[in-house]
Length: 126
Image 1 (cartoon, rainbow, N blue to C red):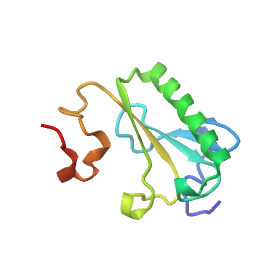
Image 2: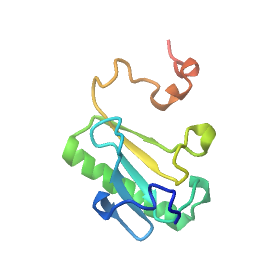
Image 3: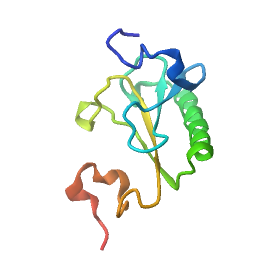
Image 4: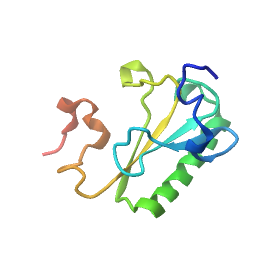
């Protein structure tokens, strides 16, 4: 773990769930109520560099986080995202998965979801 990484030096009270390979926190700058991050304990930058065991453990935490958010916030849907690399918008060089609860009418037209990363290519319907 590196001292510069904000995920490697989180205070324990921020962690809401964990297992041998990862942990879960609420996002410090949430997009919506319940916005959650799933983070590997090992400092690694890319989803494509984790082991199968780590991947399975993180996906278990993702499932658990979804159940917790369902109970606590009752969202109507979810976006799940990983910004992998600077060109994909990754600003913290420690892999983390976003679990973003979505609510009816939180956007006028939510169609396209993550496709809005590049707005001029998002709308493919009509």
